[in-house]
Image (cartoon, rainbow, N blue to C red; front, side, top):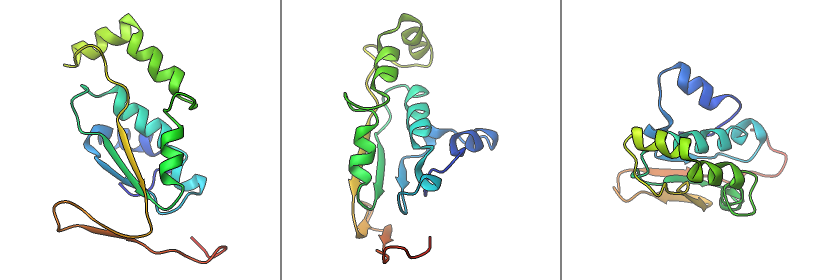
Length: 138
């Protein structure tokens, strides 16, 4: 998926696309209209998971890694939310009904800030981000 702007998760649901089917997310840049739905998307992906899926891999220009890691981290805005879901008996029961096991794992997100190009392990896919001058259009 490329970018995660306003309403992305809702729009995916309306189209019948499950967040768990997205394994890689690329941010082109960090304006709110490109990343503000990321917390909703990442937490929905996690909350609907069995806990056995590979982590969500997120790539983009700096500060992608810091942006992503701050959200679910122990000092992050969403730590209390997902941590309470892991511990709550009703949430645990729903997770088990979905096919997950206990203890329920924390959200798994791997983030990487980069400039230039990233070659994926399949050696067939390359994604390039090219830096722009400050103030240049989107």
